Length: 223
Picture 1: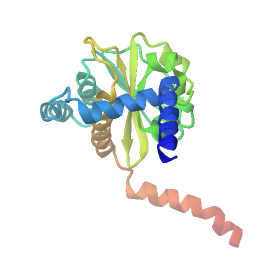
Picture 2: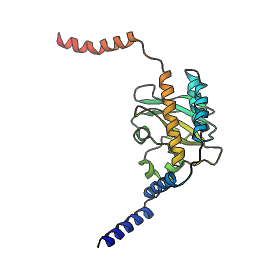
Picture 3: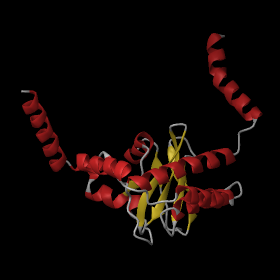
Picture 4: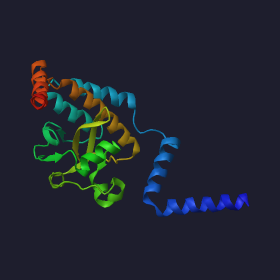
């Protein structure tokens, strides 16, 4: 009886893998991570990444260097960076060989929510062909209009979305498998910490006046 139950369960799992694209993809990732050799020399890639990143001066140059450092990991010739400058909005703040990249994105859009919650790179071609892999997110029109747009890399800092980088299609034959995804996510997190540390801090007097203005209505209500 136990053998029959086990066999029945194995058959159900097999049918699930055959007919479910998501399960097949997860099985492929599991097998690749545990039974196949790595494509990248991570020490060499990381040294090159941090070297490119450290070449940027605070400000616009650091933003461009961040784009370039991430792009070179996948042989991408161009990219652009969006960051949350205004409350509730991500806007383009720098580009590297991608002057055509324009547009703003609300922080509560399906794109930003996916990047923050899943913390995963988006392959725009795969998203269009198999939207169920990306929670059926809506790709904004401005992003679809960028010639050669290929990947969207989240910049996560302390579990929050600080920004994202849009990369142009790779010059080499690079596919977004689990290894490339993990490499880009790690690089995005490192770039996010660099970019956050370079942001100018608001002066103490501004924070004090802001706190006072917030408190004033409460004080007037008490009088």
